[in-house]
Amino acid sequence: MHLGDFWNEEGMRKNRAGIIRDNNEVGRTFRRAYKYIKGAYPFYEDSAEIISWGIDNAKVNAVTEELIGSLFGDRDVASKEGKVRRLFASAITPKGYENYLSTVLNTNKVYVVKGKAGTGTEKVLSKIMDTAVAKGYDVEAYYCALNPQKLEHLVIPEPGISLTTSNEYHNNDVKAVEEINLDNYIDQDLLDKYKNELEFNNKEFDSIMDTAILTIAKAKAIHDDMEAYYIPNMDFEAIQRCFESTLARILEYAEEFE
Image (cartoon, rainbow, N blue to C red; front, side):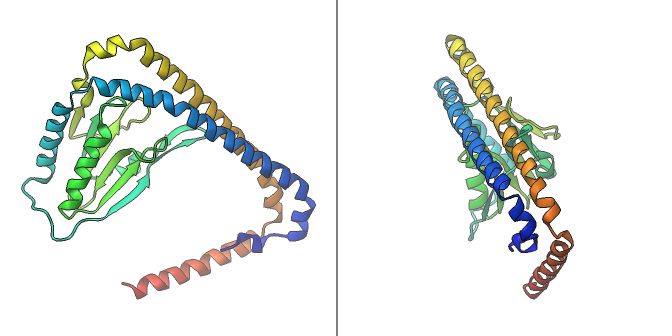
């Protein structure tokens, strides 16, 4: 669907120079924001690595196995694996860190896995996800906006179970049936030894990410100004008719596959 079919081309041409100028500036500003985000992440990674040196992985593994047992009981491995749907429930936005966990974690039971970067919260959820899939359950896997390889939340609709990680950058107000705190398995002596380094990393990460968010907000403001060129020259009634006819076609196709 090309919404450019519904604009007044003559009116758009009058604003050609402004549109090109603002569009270029939006692109440049977003690229700067992404560089800031990329520059902030190594500080986060360094803290995660330091903390990983002091985590008792054996205890984390034991807690994970106990949790898997309580979630799935004696259910056997299925003859057909479940499917994984990979999604995001959070983002880095012009307003800062935003998430929609309240609309995602709506199952009967919610488990919260707390832990600093480096404690292995994502490993706990990955093991649970792999077990659920092997036992035939479909799952929804929600990943980190800063590191799309890091699993942060898991929803298993059929048994009505959700698991979410909680840290200083994202938490939620859902009522948990159980909380697993991996920080309990960190060697406190190691945290004390590297206290200055960890504080430095956190400060630098937060500072650079604040700049990244301000830069994203600037890009959005320029984009909003650019929309002023488009809005007076769009035929919104025609767009609405296109929406209605397209929706009708989709619903017709859906009925054919029921």
